[in-house]
Image 1 (cartoon, helix red, strand yellow):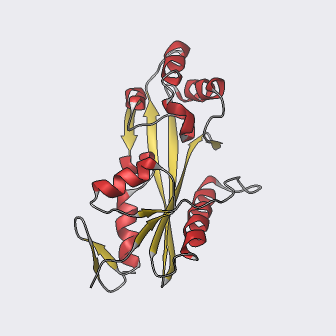
Image 2: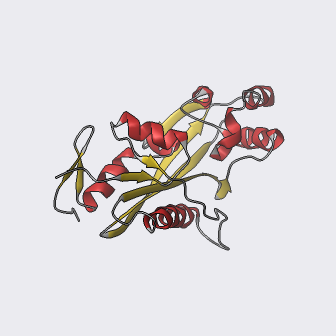
Image 3: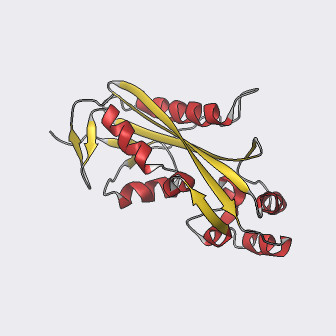
Length: 202
C-alpha cells in the first residue's frame, strides 16, 4: 500500500530535520493556535493539549493525511520556562538552570482518518555549573531566543549540558520512540525511510 501523505503542523525546523533524518519528507503546514497555558494547567497537560490542537486544526484541512504536531516546554521546580522574549530574560533563565536539573516535556500528537493519538515524553537534563558571563556570551550567539528554556541542545547549547536521562530527540522537539509508537497505533510501521501499513497496535 502507498505510504500516507504526511503533514507536519509545525514551523519548527528542528522537527522537520528529525523527520528528514528518518527519511520522511512531510508537507509543512504550521498550525496557528494560542499557546497560552490554561489556568492551573499542568505542564504535561499543556503540551499534550497543544499538540492535539495543532494536529487537529490542520487535520480538518487535510482529513486524508496523517498530521503530526508537537509542543515542548522546559520545567524547573514546577515552573514552565517558555521562549525568552528578551536577551535579559534568556540570560536569567540560563542562570537559573546552571548546575541544576530540569525536565523537558514533549507532547506529540498524530491525527488521521481513524482519529487522534497522543503521548507525552519526559526527559531529565542536568546543566553543568557556569557563571553569568558565560550565560551572556551564549545569549549573544542568538541561539537561545527561539527555544524553550533558552537553549538548544543540538547547537552551541550542548556545551552547557552535563547529563541527559531519557530521549535526546525529545529535547530537540520530536521524541522519536513516541513517534514510532503513535504511528503504529495509527496503523503504520516505520520502515527506514517509508511507512508500511499494519494492523493498528494497541
